[in-house]
Length: 187
Image (cartoon, rainbow, N blue to C red):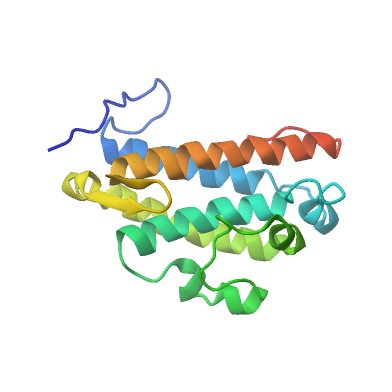
């Protein structure tokens, strides 16, 4: 059995030094920081693509939340993602299955978001994701999972690479855009 890396409990984190606690805490932070980055934004700022040269903050937040929702609920748990459970795709007029990976830049930059809807979706995904990760058996995290286009890897590595690292990279893009808009860095 492949052993996940030893992730020690950092001082002041206040959560047990178990793999499930660490994964749920850091994944929760990706979601929390992404949603917090929208605090105080206007709809115009949320959807601003800097003249078509970058994805909007709204797109990046949607992509992070949608990716986590899809990985946890569809890829791992083989259940409907929160996105489909609550018919967000119909309410927002956005893709049913697509989460932004491989989307054309033109399509990504054309997407528009409403702040309250984005926050509602993010909150629902956060609750469901953290509950799943806090209770997932270690054996499930050790199962090898195919994730396109990356290939096969243990599920704990999917969480580390796709959810955490990729999510924090998008948080960097969000903060870069906020800087271009003359707004403060958020985390």
